[in-house]
Length: 326
Image (cartoon, rainbow, N blue to C red; front, side):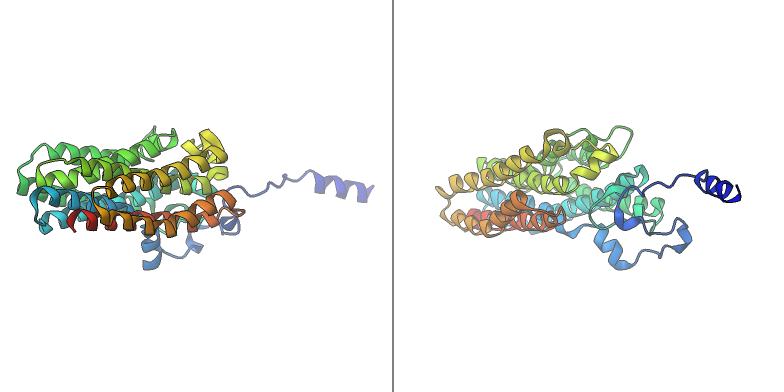
């Protein structure tokens, strides 16, 4: 009887549940005091340097297209455009870290834990850093506006910052509704490239439009690679990215089409600017990225694909810049 009672007592204890979320975080102590504060390297990592080429590409293309009109380099304005683009990119990366972290979305990530989700930094601190970079972008944009006297650009800049925040921020972030790629195409393709051309030339030649579409396609491909990596975790977290909505196979096809379509545009431009044929050298990074997207076994392999696609982007922009100014 004593033995039976003992067994019953053991069975009546609370049920054990399997840890949820990122397996790497399952071993962490729930006590925040046991987590080491974020190091400088952690903050650099959270800036997601692999994505920064996406900010450089439209400035290169836009500046090259502007020089077709003005025949001179407005290097001060071009540099200010670069500051705007890079600061916005870093700002949105920190804003995503904050928003996904407080929502618990990053608890399910495959990749390295972020600052907010890992509790290495206070959410408020991450948020302040995000808005600090938005502020840097705003100041650089204001300087461009004053220099060019194109006052309507203030409204454009405000829309860019609002779009950066509501990608994953707010009650209804559009990044959670399958619209991330559309906004990336608009802001990191069209707005960034055409805006760079306009403030330097006050004109929008067709080369700027073609280059903007190409840059936007590659930027969308980077986001697709990122979301394909996190598709299983995003489903669990309720983050309905375009990849979650259309599935792995359709995402692979869309990634491939977007990347190759950018090179079709470059080939068309090369008929008029022969140096643009050199953009085909960027296929040395693009094709391995496509291969990884189609053959990966471990989602972590897609981090390499993401990096290669970002490298493709900046090489693409650099060669188009050379073609336009050469």
